[in-house]
Image 1 (cartoon, helix red, strand yellow):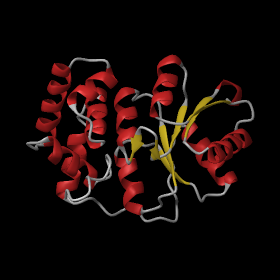
Image 2 (spheres, helix red, strand yellow):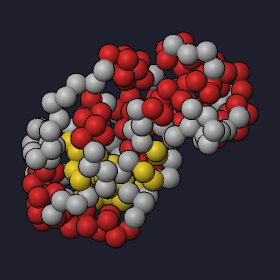
Image 3 (spheres, one colour):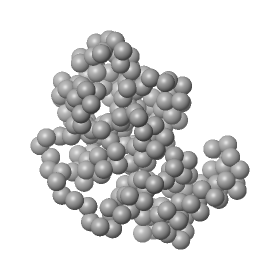
Image 4 (cartoon, one colour):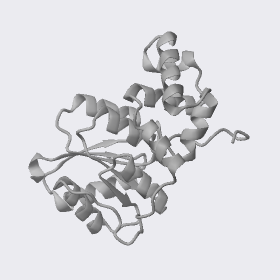
Amino acid sequence: MGSETTIVVADDHPLFRGALRGAVTAVLPGARIIEASGLEPLTKILDDEPEIDLVLLDLTMPGVQGFSGLIYLRAQHPAIPVVIVSANEDPVVIRRALDFGAAGFIPKSLEVDRIGEAIGQVLAGGNWSPPDIELSASEDKETADLMRRLATLTPQQVRVLMMLSEGLLNKQIAYELGVSEATVKAHVSAILQKLGVESRTQAVIVSSRIGATLKPPAGVE
């Protein structure tokens, strides 16, 4: 399997990309490994490469904050398994990542050989999360409903929400996405309706509460 496997390592820290490359190589010596330092190069890779077997995704890198990258990838490329690799080992974060569709969650503190084992388990069709972390607690009803609503957003709507959280105006979003302002307005309206809120600010606030996007701007709670 190793010589036929292609894995994308998406992390903005070169040293950790190197560590992940080593972990993958230890399990799959012949694997092809492609590196990405942000969401833009990652999406280009996934668009250009038809045979990606796994994405190892950091929760925080250029273009990605919180679960936004995961939500986007699961909507845009549902057939490609995504494993979160993060320094955040909060059980709530791990559980939400799995609920948003991650095939696994690997703490960056994990030993390289165990990282390799986790990757191998996911490539074999399984899921992996830290066995010593309690994940059985369920979300409250309001949070679970919001997560369900976020999961209904289209890939483009997820990107618009991510840009709203960065404080971009409609015309700036339109420029970044290469669409008209009218199209952006339509996406924003659909986002508000799906999230059950009345304004762009409310959309950013409610999505940030579960780590789906950036935190609200200072003074906005």
